[in-house]
Structure formats: structure tokens, C-alpha cells
Amino acid sequence: MSDEAKGSLINIKDVAGLSEPITKLISTIEAGCGRLANALWLNKKDADNEAYRIQQVGQAETQLLIERAKAIAGLAEGGQYVDKMEISLDNVQAQLVNHPPQSAALFERYSERAAYQNAMRQQNIEAVVEKAAEVLAHGVAVSDEPVSQAFVNKYFRAVEDVSEPAIQALWGRILAGEVQQPGSFSLRTLAFLTTLTQEEAKDFERLCAHVWQFPSGKRLPIIFYKHDPSSMDPGHARQFRFETLAHLADIGLIDFRPQTGPWALAGFSIGAPATQIAYNGSMVMVSGLPGRKLYKIASGNVLLTKIGAELVPICKPAYDYQIMDDVMQEWMSKGYTFSSTVLQPAGNGPVDGKGLK
Image (cartoon, rainbow, N blue to C red; front, side):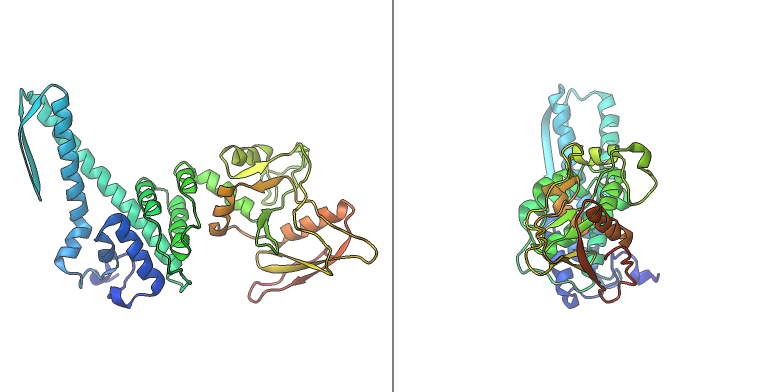
């Protein structure tokens, strides 16, 4: 990479020439991080000195001054009092009465720790913003509605401490989705994500490979849990251990009830000549046979919670068309008989439709 390309998240020379999604992303970042946002998208060589200074050191210096002031106040509460304090744009000075010698070293260590933590947090923010920009750079449509300040405040406080690359990618897709359509993610979902582990994210992403979409727009995982442990292969991509589903339920992503039997899909009826459902963009036209009324089809033992439903669209599971076939086979094994036609979407590769009679 050339020297002039270094120091920017994306090699974009002129903010005024950016696409609408990136421009809106910048304004959203500015609402949470101040003028720092513009500098992130300016080429390092062409950025003016003041903007580059803000990006590299300005925010860290400002935060450090705040932390120093807090440290001085803390020392005062511990037995000393502030006899004199002067605060300027680049310095904080205070004189403490009865200031013990060891406090100076303590204060220096505190300042160094605060500077290091702020630098790491800034690095985390920039990594997440870059992930969001990668999503929005593909020319997606965005709403004119601005992202709410409450979302911005909570979001940037949360991502400061996100350091795992896989979780950073998830947070980046959250920001991109909210820029596209404000209100897509609740504050409760943001709070939930702050405790989500990388392993939990992987398990939920694997579960999302079982999600179907229905005419109402509702997304639903269709998973028929097998109660016999001997039939479960934990290494099989299409099967889940009880513990995995129970844990995803415990943390609030799904509702899992293995003992109550399958739910019936509200609204998934075969009253018309055919009902269309979709799996990863492949349309399945389900038709009832002549002389038989089929009103509802079982959906399995898993439902999405509100948080889970909000997160499904940003997950990137490894779709497997054998999952689609397995669901059809399960329905037929319960006595449902129907005909179906798999309509191949463009560019998706061949679809295995065996068993769909």
C-alpha cells in the first residue's frame, strides 16, 4: 500500500464525492464521535493538518485530560484537597495540600493506563466502522431518516470494548443495517450484543441456515429436534445438541420447547391453489392435493425471540439445500402430502430438489 493510502479506512480522497450510504454513515459517526469521522475517510496525504491531528491524537488527548481531572478529584476525596486548579485546552494542573510522595507515581500510572485504554477503544471503533463501510460500499439503498441519537450513543459506547474480529463484523453489520433503515435494531438488542460471545454467535449463525421466509415476511427457523441422543451427530451441520438449543434459549435468542411438540405456523395454510415459501431465495410452491384440505403445517420446536428476529437478517450462515429437502421429508413423514416446485433464483447454483414430489 502506498504511503498516501495509509491512515484511512477506505482509500477515498474526497468526502463530497462519496455515495449516499457512506455519506450517511459519516454523519452517523459524527453524531457519536465528533469531527473525527471525516478524517477517517480522507486520504492521509490530502487531509488538512488539523483534521489529521484530531484523528490521531485529538480525541485521545481530550479524554486523557478528562481522566486526569478525575484522578485529581479522586485524590482529593482520599484525604487531600485541591488548593488550586488550572484547566486549558492542552493541560490540567492542580495543587494538592498534604500531597503524599507516592501519589505522584500513582497518578502517572493512572494516566498511562487511561491513555492505553483510550487508544485501544479508538482502534476497536475504527475496526467496526470499517466493517460497516464495507457493507454500505456496495450501493445499498438507505432511508432518508437519520439514525436516532439514543442508538448512536449506546452503539459507540458498546463497540469501544469489542475486540474480537468476528464480533466486530457483527457490530459492523448492525451499524450498516441501522443506517439503511433506522429502527431495525432496538436498544435492547444492542445491550444483548455486549455480552454475546464468539461461540454463541457461531451457534446462532448456524441456526440461521434453517430459517425460512413466509408470505407475510416473517422469518422462522424450521428445526425438528430429535429427542434420541443416539441419533444426533454433534459434528453434523444440520443437527443440534439439546444443550446448544437450550443455551441459545437461555440467552434470549430463541424459544425452544422440545417437550411440547411442534408449533403450527400461523398463516401458513394451503387454502389457495398454492402457497409460496422461500429458503435462501429459492421459492417453493406448496400445493394441496385434490380432495384434501391442508390448513397448517408443523414448524418444529424453535421460534425466534424479538432479539433473534432482529439479528437474523445480518447473519451470514452457510446455506445448505439439503436442509430444505430434510424439512419437506419431515412434513411428508407426518402424513402431509403435497406437490412442490423449486424455482431456481438466478446465480444461486443448482438446487437439489430430490424428495420434493
